Length: 278
Image (cartoon, rainbow, N blue to C red):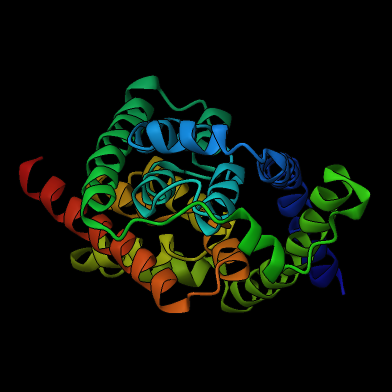
């Protein structure tokens, strides 16, 4: 009973941190849809290339809220797949908080952030220019969500936020229960007992859309259990709850899977390259 209560508390706290990001994102989208002259859509299209850079920089902030918000912006066509990927790759979820709380030296922290930023920008722009262009379609998103605009943008933004938050809570709760069932110690043992496969294992752990994955990776790195290349690979793959929101708001499942596979591939290749040159 105590374990169940702890899982519920952890899940609630994880989701509560993301709600403000979701609400502000949906409020912005609702406001953009109301702009009948399409002036702001033209501005967004004009500065679309910079979205990759902005996404990579915002992703560095210690919160998975930006990855969740980016998923919704991608679903409406406001940002490209490249920009979304840049956010996913630069996001580190709980990494910075764990390292600061453990008083890790700056020399141990900044190389990870800098590496993630550079790779996020490069990989983001590759996909941005090579990927299929999406048109801004906020109205299509609202139609899929059965949005009722009769009560104003604030009401609609709250409605979207509540719908996605409920989905996020349920999936995060199931994932946290699964991780608790497997045991964090067992996941750590799997990585530490197979050092030759640390890049692959850390990347796969990073793909778990939960705060637990970034906590495990950061802790093992601080304890000098995994090398720099492995922790970078894992944290590059770790997009927090962004993937959960993506599957909720973007109905093209194949496209979603391709984006996540691209993130995983970039993480693996980056880890192997760092392992060879360091």
